[in-house]
Length: 424
Image (cartoon, rainbow, N blue to C red; front, side, top):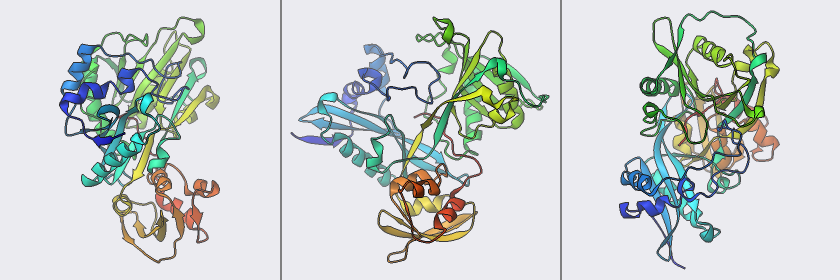
């Protein structure tokens, strides 16, 4: 058996696409409801493209930002994956290049032969060569990607609210206004709003090219989820400071009828946040509101007169990170306190001099470590979405200096939980 790992050519694009779950029809998620999905099924049904659609899609597949790798076994294309070039917002506001792993699949008849490991190695090497010191992905299964150095760094909630029990604790007057707009208008608003949001929110990423292009098309989706409605909030000066996309899907039975599904929601001000949710939670002829991709520190629960009206339906890890260059990664972000620590990462010691205005990180061979951990744990801790004390208590890192883990938490803690609302 001869295995070759390499990028594909344009002539191989269609065959490469036939490997992906989007085309092959093989499962793309664990068989249970996912946090980012508002529907009732375990995971969304795959609407396979026609031959013409596939050819059209593949015509522009190979670009500077989409970097596919493939595994060939005895000349046959047996597995594929890709890196997309994106940016990630770090604590302190710096936006850095990140290689996003996506579209990963191996034909069932070629699994358990190490193809994914070899493709992953080639893609991570490509990231390093391009100066990307971080790699990220959204894991379809929780047991696969830890072996390649990734650790879950951000998380999402999927929750439901009973509409009849969703009154706000404190009445409020909106100084701005809400508007329902068409898809073409939404396609102009969302890129600007997302740029503003990702400049401020740790863990957010840049959108892939064409992310907003489908808004203007409109039409009824084939899955019965209903047309997209675009809700926009403008402040007193008329500037957009929030927006939401929601659907009112048709249901064949009374148990699932009357649902308002929120697919996207962004608000830059408290006024926009309250006004948008105030309307979404009070649509006539609806029974409950389902929201996906929500941050774990969502404040809506504490705005309700009855906090139990908001029921957490699922928590799911979202962005997994792999730290490809420890020194550059630790120097790229800012910290919530000032301290000096020695971190031993996979047997290599690093001296971190951290402060709110930046950091210096240098190799420290022979230095006594305050904390020992692997690159997996560092990936989870990096944005502040997981606490070091949790890993210590789980036996996943070692504290050599008394109090060092608490000091590390104090350094890494962001003002808000890291969150990524954008898929890739």
